[in-house]
Amino acid sequence: MKRLSPGTLAALPAEVARPLYDREAQKVGIVHFGIGAFHRAHQAWYTDAAMNEGDADWAITGISLRSAGVARQMNPQGGLYTVAEQSAEGARLRIVGSVRNVLVASEEPDAVIAAVAAPSTHIVSLTVTEKGYCRSADGTLDFDLAHSLSFYYFVTQGLLARAKAGLGGVTLLSCDNLADNGAKLHALMLQYLDRHEPDLVPWFEANCTCPSTMIDRIVPATTDEDRAMVAKALGGLSDEACVVTEPFSQWVIEDRFAGPRPRWEAVGAQLVSEVGPYETAKLRMLNGAHSLLAYCGLKAGYEYVHEAIADPALRQLATSLMHEEAAPTITPAPGQDLAAYAEALIARFANPCLNHRLIQIAMDGSQKIPQRWLETLAESAAQGRTCPAILTAISAWIHHLSGANGPVDDPMAASLSLIVRRYLSGRDAAEALFSAAGPLSGYWHPTPEDLDYVGRHADIRPVQTTLLQ
Ligand code: CS2
Image 1 (cartoon, rainbow, N blue to C red):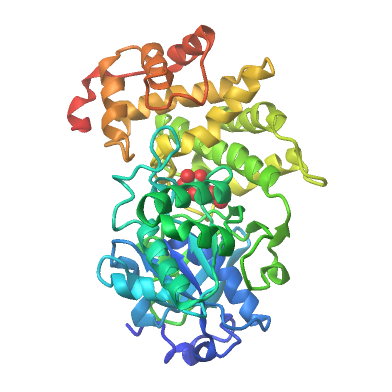
Image 2 (image 1 turned 45 degrees about the horizontal axis):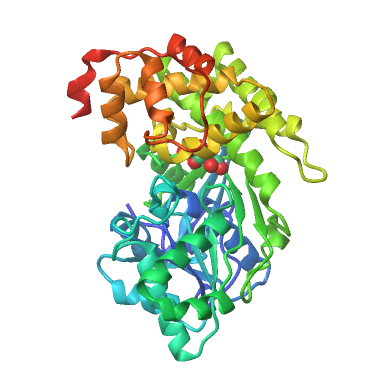
């Protein structure tokens, strides 16, 4: 089967949208770490749209830190790939042309550093997931994790080369689901620089910025069925790098750039002075409800988000989490309607055409739960409210940690599983997980009533040990 590539673009069916600009003529303006499905359906898609509108020189060099898989998918296609937006109304396809190439950092470290250091590069963006920031339990940089194959190393070496060459700085743009992602990235970068390149700190502070962003689009992992559907719609061309997503997308960006940037606001992004209320609402409502549906849905025997949200009891829990527990902890920005947001989220979760696996969302719970649930719990407690939906979700997470849904995929799996195995009651496991010495200490202090509630709903099965090895 022929592959999608610059040479086969002309053979595509007329209804498939494609880049309107001269791809070869564009300089690389963005280096992006973590070029997975999410980036391809979100920031690269916005950047492609901005270039369709006439913006120039914002081609993207994608970096994969370890895996060569994405490079094998994208480089033979000259960086081209399809974004398929799926809903009950059908699929809408667009070929995105903003990605120039993909570098695998473990194979070509010097090329990655050179890309960051190139004069045309103005933005270094990141979707490395929550765990990619290499934070220890207290939120500071874990220097053992932030070793020579982390983005910290490549960004630092690239910035060092820029400073030596007398070039300007860059904007470091975190597009991950962390509260205050820009401020966090800034603080962690400084810790890394302080240890490894202290002389660069004043240059970094004077020449680089780390704006915060709120990024939103549901992008399930691409499956073989998705690739077959796309190949059919492309008139028989195969696309190994395609992504399937929902029609909705949102990107709110703090307008604090160190240098030039694409005119993303011309293609739907919101450039604002304060991202906080959007980011908090997204993390606590969308992601909070997502994680609830993941653990409670798996416990109830479901595989996909659209199945879980169709269950009246789970839908009620997700609705309560958003309306009654998370929303009251958020001070909305002018014009931000949290009730309408929650309703829209329920409809997005119910999209029957997106096969979004609950187990994909259940991954890395230890990295996600603090900003999704624990901040809501802590703020609600301070305001004198309890959060039964989130407590139910915590009990389902403990059930998940017991191995009930298969091996636990989480950077802290070993210590979490050990705790759950050691305590045979859900109440005691919860107490240990959130205690001062526990792996999730410091965010929320459960009351005895909270622990009783979790204990009543938790269901730990002590015979799971083989799954946990
Ligand atoms: C999900 C997110 O996998 C997960 O943890 O909750 O990836 C979610 O789909 C996105 O943040 C939506 O913008």
